[in-house]
Length: 152
Image (cartoon, rainbow, N blue to C red):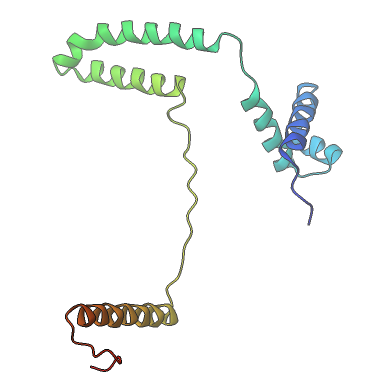
């Protein structure tokens, strides 16, 4: 089993894969050259692509938002009148805006599943009973029902 590369090593690999792909190599061949699978080569290329920041991207988003706002305003009379075509177009504009701002990206969820066995259930019941006994003992002590020597 190979050790996972550090973050810096991964990015170095990502840029190398990106460069080889730009030169026309496919991911299978890149994987062979780099010593990993085609899927890993593809994943590294996607990491490089996510790291590329286009100059002026925020300015471009702002311009696109303004265009979408103008189109949406033009659709408002039809939307208010219940025109199905205007509503459909408005939904498409909203979807476009969500994509523009990355709101439709997949959400990664990590879930841990724990199976409760009969042993777990018995242990929980035992702990619950012990806590109840301790609570009753505190109440008895507070009410003066316990003798100083500890007997009831």
